Amino acid sequence: MKVGFGYDVHKLAPNESFILGGIQIESDIGTVAHSDGDVLAHAIIDAILGAAGLGDIGDHFPDTDMKYKNCNSMELLAKCVELVRKNNFVIGNIDATINLEKPKLYTYKEAMKNSIAKVCEIESTNVNIKATTNEKMGFVGRNEGIAVYCVCMIIQRV
Image (cartoon, rainbow, N blue to C red):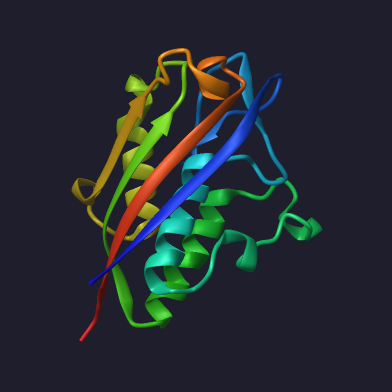
């Protein structure tokens, strides 16, 4: 077994789309990004790649490459799952914490969990999504950005 940690952050701005875990979030603000800005998918990708010792999201999908402009981050996640499998690992579990003041994410968590589980080809019981605020402190507290922290365990196939 190996464990990886992922972290990602994006700026929030009005009139931008807001996608988390492949799910469109209803909000008057969204993420500013080169891709679709799915900060949850990005943190999961980094956790998976880290666990496998395969670098980070920028190594595989650089934001300087125009082919990733406005790309679907869940497709990038699927590519990472395939890469990990080619290296003889499967995903054991994913645990992520979304740090955001608003909007509240309670009604979206189950859909995000199911979306991630489907792409990662694991049971939804092996995906956990938590959401918390920053108690109005820092850039997250001022609703200027969103941060996601994630751990992932991968298991070597025998």
